[in-house]
Length: 74
Image (cartoon, rainbow, N blue to C red; front, top):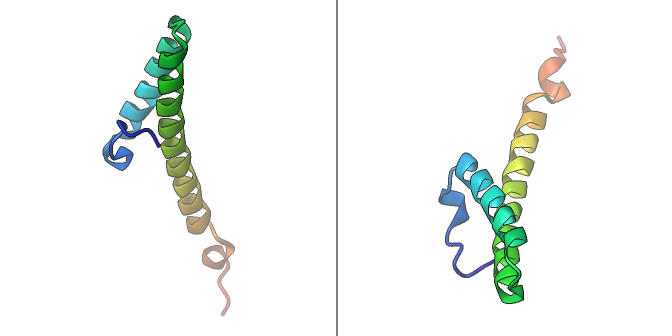
């Protein structure tokens, strides 16, 4: 995790996606390898947070649609 990223769980999903898009553009705009390294570390942090949120959302959907709730046994 990048030390300047802060607490990513407090950032809204839309803002997180926007930051990934913006940093990706900046990564390809710069030729400075040190800047690219820092941007890459930030991107990894943001993408990791996005992945965790997507996994949590998928787990919630799968739990809501479990067969135990769909099948009634009398």
